[in-house]
Image 1 (tube, chains in turn brown, red):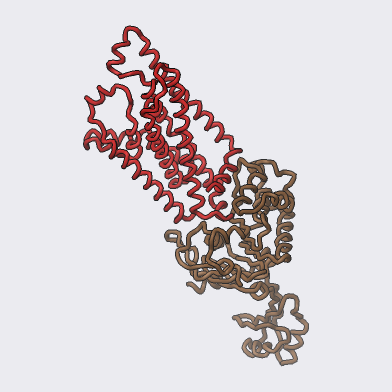
Image 2: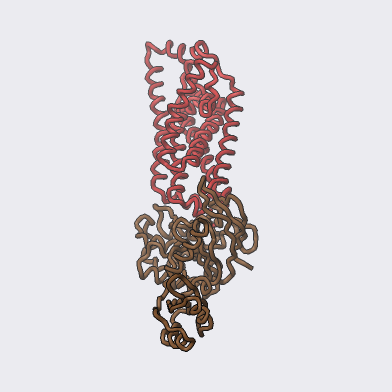
Amino acid sequence: MPILSVQNLHKHYGPVHALKGVSFDVPAGSVFGILGPNGSGKTTLLGIMMDIIKPTSGTFQLFDETPSAKLRSQIGTLLETPNFYHYLTAVQNLRIAAKIKGRGEADVERVLGMVDLLARKNSRFSTYSLGMKQRLAVASCLLGNPEVLVFDEPTNGLDPVGIAETRELIKKLNKEGKTIIMASHMLDEVEKVCTHVAILQKGVLISNGHVDEILVNEDIVEISSKNLETLSRKVQQLPGATHVKINQQYVEVFFPSGEAMLENINQYCFEKGEVLNHLRLRRKSLETKFFELTQTNNTQKK
Amino acid sequence: MLKLLKIEWLKLKNYRTFWILASLYVISIFGINYIVYRIQEEIYNEKQAKGVAEMVMGSRPYEFPIVWQMASYVSSFLLFFPGLFLIILVTNEYSYKTHRQNIIDGWSRSQFISVKIALAVIPALFSTLLVFIVATGFGLAGKEPFDTNKIYYLGYYFIQALSYSMVALLFAILFKRGGLAIGVFFLYAVVLENLVGGLMNHYLNYSGRYLPLESTDNLIPLPLFQQVQKNIIPSANFTALFIVALIYLVIYYIVINRKFKTDDL
């Protein structure tokens, strides 16, 4: 049973087409990353899930059921910014959230402990730093120990320690069997934390699946010889290579990260009668990959 | 609903602005009536003017049973205050974005908006109760015995108070930003409607009486100078005013609900 299933969601804000027919499923037990640059429609998507934004068309199901307020109360959600009453303390704010969720107030202390805010629990929200506000929002999500958590940019505004702690927390929650849906514009965050990813760009879902399949880290070896055509044909059989691409100057041979051995490649080509005049290893960063994924989509549209 | 109201109470009870405004309102309701009461005492106790005052103005307004009407009439000048309070409460939710969070956390949109409408009814009830206490107090201080004749003016006062609160809630939901909603509410309630109403009364056969807030204002006429009033302006069709006031309340209710339930929050 998918935790969340989205079918053909569209959203228009006046002339802006923020979501253009997005469909995907979030499998139970996954850490599902929604990755995309700012303005790609991540928050709109999560907002629709939470009934604070009305979709122009399309449907979605939570836990295989028609969405309802009751189902929402079983999901811990942090959307965009921490939203609390500024004049109330952390405890008073969490009591309100707990009551709305229909959870006991006893849980308030526990979740404040989990995000290390017990020492400041009776301070007003308005006196909190940005990082503390963010942690309080995470605490609020954890009220009642929900099976599904939704985080929109969970490490936003945190210092490096806070970022590491939050990522650890997400992994820990996932290990306990919880499903986590998180939106992020940071590729390395998605790569470090998520098991699944959906990449959004300008409201279009351009890729979606297991993180290992979508965000493969690759070694790319550029080679060239007199005749690129024959060279590329010969290196197709190169042991370990995943695929081969040819462009105007080089043949590019792709290997899984860290597995490209230049000496072996050189020797292989020589044995096949190809004398290389260029051999260079290029490690492809995730950023390049992400850039490439989003860029290709751009050019396709043109 | 009780469960929802308990949650609203958690939001309110530690909100200092609420307590300050509520206390000031209680004091002001008493205060404004006391001022008018003192003026009455001055005029009616003046030996030379005594007979003239009663002839022109009518019997003492702070005596039973007219005191029900008089206290309602005088207190209604402060009805913008519960409205102001309501606008602050609702636009706070917008500026803290807690209206989103409440729904994310598991309220339905209709739960959220229905508890806000309940919050418009409660100050109207509270205000009516205050007027009851003040009118009883001043009435008992007077010379006439306790009399519940004309106490139905408190019912009209409640409708008037509810209309002001609902208009305030409507503006809060439409404009979302506190300053803007308060500005528009005050200008509308204090200046614009009176201006338009005055012009309509002058040129369009007193139709200005049926404007949203005017219709409820006119439910409780000033109990003084009634003889004089009758000679200058034709008296209002009370039943029509009453029905129009109720229709407006239904319209506010529908618009507020629809707006909140269909908008992106």
